Length: 528
Image (cartoon, rainbow, N blue to C red; front, side, top):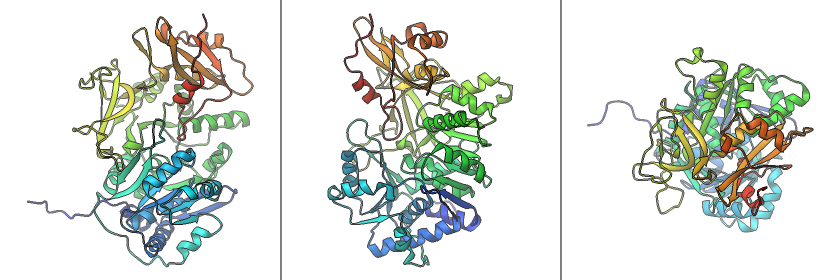
């Protein structure tokens, strides 16, 4: 026997339908790379997306064909999310920061039929065209080309219908080891992720929200912002160029109250504010993810009255799996206690589950005691089961997916990342958290960025060294940092050496590349 309620397939086209019907005039604002500002609204995005769906139909797009984009954040890119999926296709957002070999691999592996790109990436497109065998048509977002392509249609049509289990979006991991892997999101998984993300215990969005997603639209489902915003009628503010000066200007001019970005975004914003003598724009929520947000940054945001949402997730989890939110006794906590709590990676919301298992025996689930660290696993309604075109499942038979992170889980369910399984430093049989060491170092007022790696040691197996980028005009020494860290980490965690560099290598998604850093310091000899 079936239930007696109405049944509607959970498809992302329903999100833009809702936004256009219930919040038609709520704006989407874009500061373009040339400095101009473009404005549209949810009604306009739906109209243009329907025109694009008609253009794709005329092209001959078939169900589940891939439509690729090579672009930054702007209103036309947003249109493609709904146009491609509404035509029954799969939107494939490509990271332009990838190496040519990776770009070659993912476009051919995805078998993209159409590629739509920003003019700034034309050199990449021209260079890669001979290697991209599956792409039949190239369209530029700029110079009126995209507008003319969809403008040949009237938008008087309907979305392609189908199952909520149909794929709708394809994102590839950054491929730090081996070829990038494709994560194929479903309509259903994205809708369920949206319903979670708009909750007060997650991104806490509503019709009053003015959201600036600084995280790129090509990265990890754009944290779900393009799906969540029309669901609640939020205003979106995009900046095609992530210049901190422009970002802060837009925050003030457009009344931005929610900002989402990785830690490097917040570093850049604070450096600009310090250099210009300005105060932080009056935002009320700061979302951060991608890597651990240092306590010093959290404290500065909270001191300005900003609610910090510290998220953890990955491309494989759509991406938000956990989020910090206030506890029942929040008002009773001291400021330092609140900062310490927000430095954790948060608790799983309904639809996502986490656990830690032994690093030595993955069949042993570890207690949630806030002390025992292990390999972090996740499962849930928007967690990957199998990579695109893979022959075997990435998740286990019970759905548990090994994240590659090392974490401990507190009694209240809060996750605390301590490292990546491949980055953890083992010294004398004991584990040293490179993440905790880095966060402690970044708290020094003269340190712009820090990374800890293990190097071979004849007695202790490995010992940590700290690689540091000084803030401009500062002259902090290795001895200064050792003194600074002395009361912040265990004595045996203190780095055996501090090396200063002009820059630390990063992955295509903006995270510190420990692999490249270890290669850079291969053969490093510790001081006697």
